[in-house]
Image (cartoon, rainbow, N blue to C red):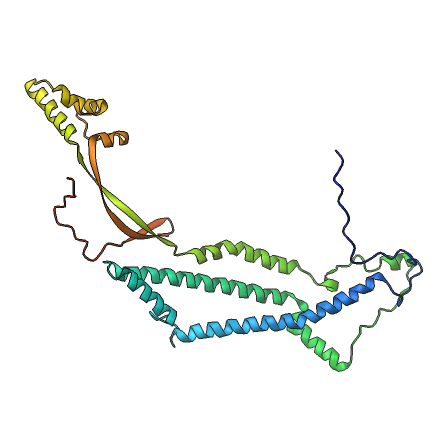
Length: 319
């Protein structure tokens, strides 16, 4: 089967087809477009550095505001911002009629602060990543900038070409090609290592951001008692064994044959598939609870109402 034809993409830099062998430095060449590329990239650098500085200043401002709001001792107070007050009001409005309102306030507060700390730890990791990447760029280091400033003051603008040596043309053509490219275009090896370390830390950061996840559960409590037909059969069975009184056919026909067999063996527990044949089941509710995970454990706060105190003993309707 012939391969599907894929048209070539147009070249951004054309090939020099005519006069390639006679070209001299200073003549026009398609590669001259690289000068425009370099000028364009240089032009982007100041704006990007200003944006980075502005972002860093916004981060400092926000973190300083948060720190000042926590109080002079650096300890978070119960309501350190208007947002905290608003959150507490929402919880009270929704759950003021619940027995465990205070525990709900505590649980939601713990989970909010866990998420806040998770976000701050993620920000810390991102800022550390940024500073580490800045440290790997030689042209942004303090040492480089200082030496560059000194060179500017001395008037050293262009590097002087190396003095020619007595080498053959063959040797000159391959001269310097076995040396590393890093001094020419900078190395990304250290930056890659920093990124790998950051990526390895990402699962922990995601877990910290997702910590404190909880949920509400609505549930019903099943209450059961024996069906009247089962009670009647058991009483007839006991009378049969004690007094040899025959079990009336209508009583025997009123229950499931397997239930009758199990009663004859003295069973008090029945398989799940037979429970509806044995019991009348009433579901009491709805009830509610709030739950959350910590590690492998699940914790629960009842959302019972303040007046959820049934009479004792409790007999649901239908019993």
